[in-house]
Image 1 (cartoon, helix red, strand yellow):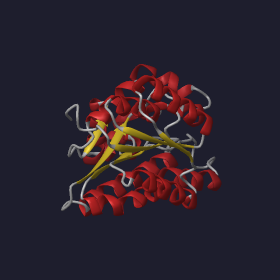
Image 2 (cartoon, rainbow, N blue to C red; image 1 turned 135 degrees about the horizontal axis):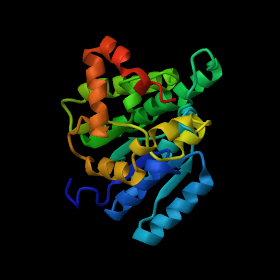
Image 3 (cartoon, rainbow, N blue to C red; image 1 turned 90 degrees about the vertical axis):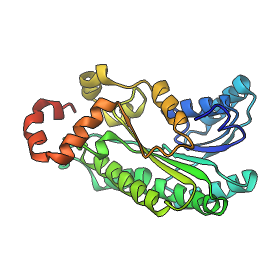
Length: 265
């Protein structure tokens, strides 16, 4: 991506109150884009928008919204489109996980995870697609996970939601083949963010994978660098994706040989 690609672009980021969503917001503003920040924590969004203005001079839009509430999503996106006329990039970053054995996971928790990670992502995507198609331009970036490719014990529900995100993303990409709209899946491994405050309350998983954890700034920078490119997938780190590929080809072997490597949670 060249340095002028993002200038004056409108970039909507869900889950923008922390982690890679927050970092991406700063980075695109530095390149002259206008971030539109969506999250449930309104106070954090105000704080981030203020920092963006101080650092870059860019005025951000920000909205408190729970993406699992489809009516709220519709209301917010209609207002965004009214104020900006179009969305150039949508980054579906909102999501969470909770590591549990299937026997211990409640149906309520399962439904909520799907509501945020899958249905919320689809709802946001559907709100920007008509305008993107009318303009024949845009980029939809869905933050999935390596867990959507290679599920491990205690991540069954979370992996299922990310597997659904990958399926949706791949199908959408094919549906838009004849347009100038890009669709990219980002599949990171564990990132050093607040995600694990909920996902891994015991702290055992973080302790086990500490040396492999990605830095949010590095992930955010790579996401910004693929904007308006035809990158199909961004897999981070690259070596971790090798395990996913091997699992696709030789699932039984990986499950047998993987041993302790698959039981980090």
